Image: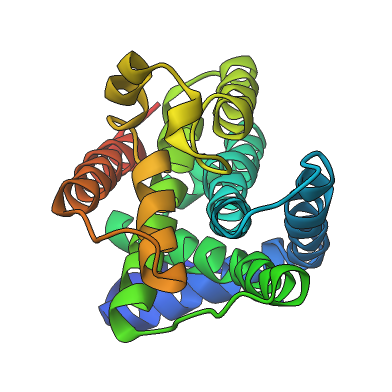
Length: 253
Protein backbone atom coordinates (compact mmCIF):
# COMPACT_ATOMS: atom_id res chain seq x y z
CA UNK A 1 0.00 0.00 0.00
CA UNK A 2 1.31 3.41 -0.95
CA UNK A 3 0.86 6.43 1.28
CA UNK A 4 2.28 9.85 1.85
CA UNK A 5 3.57 10.31 5.37
CA UNK A 6 5.32 13.11 7.27
CA UNK A 7 8.86 11.80 6.51
CA UNK A 8 8.28 13.05 2.98
CA UNK A 9 9.14 16.50 4.34
CA UNK A 10 12.77 15.39 4.47
CA UNK A 11 12.74 14.42 0.81
CA UNK A 12 13.59 16.67 -2.07
CA UNK A 13 11.05 18.61 -4.07
CA UNK A 14 11.19 16.21 -7.02
CA UNK A 15 10.63 13.17 -4.78
CA UNK A 16 7.66 14.88 -3.16
CA UNK A 17 6.19 15.61 -6.58
CA UNK A 18 6.61 12.05 -7.87
CA UNK A 19 5.13 10.67 -4.65
CA UNK A 20 2.09 12.91 -4.96
CA UNK A 21 1.65 11.89 -8.61
CA UNK A 22 1.89 8.22 -7.64
CA UNK A 23 -0.66 8.71 -4.88
CA UNK A 24 -3.06 10.51 -7.23
CA UNK A 25 -2.72 7.78 -9.85
CA UNK A 26 -3.69 5.19 -7.27
CA UNK A 27 -6.72 7.24 -6.19
CA UNK A 28 -7.89 7.73 -9.78
CA UNK A 29 -6.91 4.35 -11.26
CA UNK A 30 -10.55 3.45 -11.97
CA UNK A 31 -11.71 6.90 -13.02
CA UNK A 32 -9.02 7.71 -15.59
CA UNK A 33 -9.97 4.87 -17.99
CA UNK A 34 -13.62 5.95 -17.76
CA UNK A 35 -12.67 9.55 -18.56
CA UNK A 36 -10.69 8.30 -21.56
CA UNK A 37 -13.78 6.58 -22.97
CA UNK A 38 -15.91 9.66 -22.30
CA UNK A 39 -13.43 11.88 -24.15
CA UNK A 40 -13.36 9.54 -27.13
CA UNK A 41 -17.15 9.62 -27.40
CA UNK A 42 -17.20 13.40 -26.98
CA UNK A 43 -14.69 13.86 -29.81
CA UNK A 44 -16.65 11.56 -32.12
CA UNK A 45 -19.94 13.23 -31.17
CA UNK A 46 -18.65 16.72 -32.00
CA UNK A 47 -16.95 15.86 -35.28
CA UNK A 48 -19.42 13.29 -36.60
CA UNK A 49 -22.57 14.27 -34.69
CA UNK A 50 -22.50 18.03 -35.16
CA UNK A 51 -21.36 17.51 -38.74
CA UNK A 52 -24.68 15.78 -39.50
CA UNK A 53 -26.55 18.97 -38.59
CA UNK A 54 -25.04 20.79 -41.56
CA UNK A 55 -26.26 19.64 -44.99
CA UNK A 56 -23.07 20.82 -46.69
CA UNK A 57 -19.84 21.17 -44.79
CA UNK A 58 -17.36 23.67 -46.18
CA UNK A 59 -13.62 23.40 -45.55
CA UNK A 60 -13.82 26.25 -43.03
CA UNK A 61 -16.69 24.61 -41.14
CA UNK A 62 -14.70 21.37 -40.99
CA UNK A 63 -11.76 23.21 -39.45
CA UNK A 64 -14.02 24.86 -36.85
CA UNK A 65 -15.56 21.51 -35.88
CA UNK A 66 -12.16 19.83 -35.71
CA UNK A 67 -10.43 22.53 -33.66
CA UNK A 68 -13.59 22.89 -31.57
CA UNK A 69 -13.51 19.19 -30.69
CA UNK A 70 -9.96 19.58 -29.36
CA UNK A 71 -10.86 22.73 -27.44
CA UNK A 72 -14.06 21.33 -25.91
CA UNK A 73 -12.23 18.17 -24.90
CA UNK A 74 -9.68 20.25 -23.00
CA UNK A 75 -12.46 22.32 -21.43
CA UNK A 76 -14.42 19.20 -20.45
CA UNK A 77 -11.46 17.60 -18.70
CA UNK A 78 -9.99 20.77 -17.20
CA UNK A 79 -13.00 22.82 -16.17
CA UNK A 80 -15.59 20.08 -15.62
CA UNK A 81 -14.17 16.63 -14.83
CA UNK A 82 -11.14 17.72 -12.79
CA UNK A 83 -13.23 20.27 -10.91
CA UNK A 84 -15.85 17.65 -10.08
CA UNK A 85 -13.22 15.21 -8.81
CA UNK A 86 -11.52 17.89 -6.70
CA UNK A 87 -14.95 18.82 -5.34
CA UNK A 88 -15.59 15.19 -4.38
CA UNK A 89 -12.15 14.96 -2.78
CA UNK A 90 -12.91 18.12 -0.81
CA UNK A 91 -16.17 16.67 0.50
CA UNK A 92 -14.51 13.35 1.41
CA UNK A 93 -11.76 15.09 3.37
CA UNK A 94 -8.96 14.23 0.94
CA UNK A 95 -8.12 17.90 0.36
CA UNK A 96 -7.90 18.50 4.13
CA UNK A 97 -5.59 15.50 4.36
CA UNK A 98 -3.39 16.96 1.62
CA UNK A 99 -3.25 20.24 3.51
CA UNK A 100 -2.01 18.40 6.59
CA UNK A 101 0.90 16.80 4.75
CA UNK A 102 4.36 18.36 5.20
CA UNK A 103 4.78 18.83 1.47
CA UNK A 104 4.89 21.89 -0.76
CA UNK A 105 1.46 23.21 -1.73
CA UNK A 106 2.91 24.00 -5.14
CA UNK A 107 3.79 20.32 -5.54
CA UNK A 108 0.22 19.32 -4.69
CA UNK A 109 -1.03 21.60 -7.44
CA UNK A 110 1.62 20.50 -9.94
CA UNK A 111 0.88 16.82 -9.30
CA UNK A 112 -2.81 17.29 -10.03
CA UNK A 113 -2.08 19.44 -13.08
CA UNK A 114 0.20 16.73 -14.49
CA UNK A 115 -2.37 13.99 -13.82
CA UNK A 116 -5.21 15.87 -15.51
CA UNK A 117 -2.97 17.10 -18.30
CA UNK A 118 -2.17 13.51 -19.25
CA UNK A 119 -5.81 12.54 -18.70
CA UNK A 120 -6.88 14.91 -21.48
CA UNK A 121 -4.38 13.52 -24.03
CA UNK A 122 -6.59 10.63 -25.29
CA UNK A 123 -9.36 13.09 -26.16
CA UNK A 124 -6.92 15.39 -27.96
CA UNK A 125 -5.45 12.49 -29.93
CA UNK A 126 -8.91 11.16 -30.82
CA UNK A 127 -10.06 14.61 -31.98
CA UNK A 128 -7.08 14.93 -34.31
CA UNK A 129 -7.58 11.38 -35.59
CA UNK A 130 -11.32 11.86 -36.15
CA UNK A 131 -10.64 15.15 -37.96
CA UNK A 132 -8.25 13.41 -40.31
CA UNK A 133 -10.58 10.47 -40.95
CA UNK A 134 -13.79 12.50 -41.27
CA UNK A 135 -12.59 15.60 -43.14
CA UNK A 136 -9.20 14.49 -44.48
CA UNK A 137 -7.62 17.52 -42.84
CA UNK A 138 -3.87 17.90 -42.53
CA UNK A 139 -2.80 18.34 -38.92
CA UNK A 140 0.35 20.41 -38.40
CA UNK A 141 2.44 19.64 -35.31
CA UNK A 142 5.20 21.92 -34.03
CA UNK A 143 7.03 22.66 -30.80
CA UNK A 144 5.21 26.00 -30.51
CA UNK A 145 1.86 24.33 -31.13
CA UNK A 146 2.46 21.66 -28.48
CA UNK A 147 3.59 24.31 -25.98
CA UNK A 148 0.48 26.45 -26.58
CA UNK A 149 -1.72 23.35 -26.34
CA UNK A 150 -0.14 22.51 -22.97
CA UNK A 151 -0.64 26.13 -21.88
CA UNK A 152 -4.34 25.88 -22.75
CA UNK A 153 -4.61 22.60 -20.86
CA UNK A 154 -3.06 24.00 -17.69
CA UNK A 155 -5.23 27.12 -17.84
CA UNK A 156 -8.45 25.05 -18.10
CA UNK A 157 -7.36 22.67 -15.36
CA UNK A 158 -6.58 25.54 -12.99
CA UNK A 159 -9.97 27.12 -13.70
CA UNK A 160 -11.60 23.83 -12.70
CA UNK A 161 -9.47 23.66 -9.54
CA UNK A 162 -10.31 27.23 -8.58
CA UNK A 163 -14.05 26.65 -8.93
CA UNK A 164 -13.84 23.42 -6.92
CA UNK A 165 -11.67 24.85 -4.13
CA UNK A 166 -13.56 28.10 -3.60
CA UNK A 167 -17.23 27.27 -4.23
CA UNK A 168 -19.70 24.92 -2.50
CA UNK A 169 -20.68 21.61 -4.08
CA UNK A 170 -23.91 22.75 -5.77
CA UNK A 171 -22.21 25.82 -7.23
CA UNK A 172 -19.39 23.71 -8.69
CA UNK A 173 -21.91 21.62 -10.64
CA UNK A 174 -23.70 24.78 -11.81
CA UNK A 175 -20.50 26.46 -13.03
CA UNK A 176 -19.49 23.26 -14.83
CA UNK A 177 -22.78 23.17 -16.72
CA UNK A 178 -22.58 26.86 -17.59
CA UNK A 179 -19.07 26.44 -18.99
CA UNK A 180 -20.00 23.46 -21.17
CA UNK A 181 -23.29 24.92 -22.40
CA UNK A 182 -21.63 28.27 -23.04
CA UNK A 183 -18.79 26.56 -24.88
CA UNK A 184 -21.08 24.48 -27.08
CA UNK A 185 -23.84 26.96 -27.83
CA UNK A 186 -22.86 30.54 -27.09
CA UNK A 187 -19.14 30.71 -27.91
CA UNK A 188 -17.63 30.63 -31.40
CA UNK A 189 -15.60 27.49 -30.74
CA UNK A 190 -17.25 25.06 -33.16
CA UNK A 191 -18.56 27.75 -35.50
CA UNK A 192 -17.56 31.11 -36.96
CA UNK A 193 -17.88 34.26 -34.76
CA UNK A 194 -19.85 35.96 -37.55
CA UNK A 195 -22.90 34.01 -36.39
CA UNK A 196 -23.01 35.91 -33.09
CA UNK A 197 -23.73 39.61 -32.46
CA UNK A 198 -20.57 41.69 -32.56
CA UNK A 199 -20.97 42.95 -28.99
CA UNK A 200 -20.59 39.40 -27.63
CA UNK A 201 -16.92 39.39 -28.67
CA UNK A 202 -16.10 41.58 -25.67
CA UNK A 203 -17.45 38.84 -23.43
CA UNK A 204 -16.04 35.63 -24.91
CA UNK A 205 -12.65 37.21 -25.70
CA UNK A 206 -12.21 38.00 -21.99
CA UNK A 207 -12.30 34.31 -21.07
CA UNK A 208 -9.67 31.77 -22.17
CA UNK A 209 -12.03 29.38 -23.97
CA UNK A 210 -12.40 31.09 -27.36
CA UNK A 211 -8.79 32.40 -27.44
CA UNK A 212 -7.62 28.81 -26.82
CA UNK A 213 -9.73 27.49 -29.69
CA UNK A 214 -8.37 30.21 -32.01
CA UNK A 215 -4.78 29.34 -31.15
CA UNK A 216 -5.42 25.63 -31.67
CA UNK A 217 -7.09 26.41 -35.00
CA UNK A 218 -4.15 28.57 -36.05
CA UNK A 219 -1.31 26.33 -34.96
CA UNK A 220 -2.68 22.89 -35.83
CA UNK A 221 -4.99 23.66 -38.77
CA UNK A 222 -3.24 26.78 -40.16
CA UNK A 223 -6.37 28.90 -40.06
CA UNK A 224 -5.71 32.53 -39.08
CA UNK A 225 -2.73 34.12 -37.36
CA UNK A 226 -1.28 33.79 -33.88
CA UNK A 227 -2.63 36.50 -31.60
CA UNK A 228 -0.48 37.75 -28.73
CA UNK A 229 -3.66 38.99 -27.09
CA UNK A 230 -5.06 35.45 -27.04
CA UNK A 231 -1.86 34.12 -25.49
CA UNK A 232 -1.91 36.93 -22.91
CA UNK A 233 -5.52 36.16 -21.92
CA UNK A 234 -4.62 32.51 -21.34
CA UNK A 235 -1.54 33.44 -19.29
CA UNK A 236 -3.55 35.89 -17.15
CA UNK A 237 -6.19 33.28 -16.32
CA UNK A 238 -3.53 30.64 -15.68
CA UNK A 239 -1.60 32.82 -13.23
CA UNK A 240 -4.75 34.16 -11.58
CA UNK A 241 -6.25 30.69 -11.03
CA UNK A 242 -2.90 29.25 -9.91
CA UNK A 243 -2.65 31.91 -7.19
CA UNK A 244 -6.26 31.32 -6.08
CA UNK A 245 -5.80 27.53 -5.99
CA UNK A 246 -2.57 27.87 -4.07
CA UNK A 247 -4.22 30.17 -1.54
CA UNK A 248 -7.06 27.65 -1.13
CA UNK A 249 -4.54 24.90 -0.32
CA UNK A 250 -2.78 27.14 2.19
CA UNK A 251 -6.04 28.09 3.84
CA UNK A 252 -6.83 26.24 7.04
CA UNK A 253 -10.35 25.18 8.00
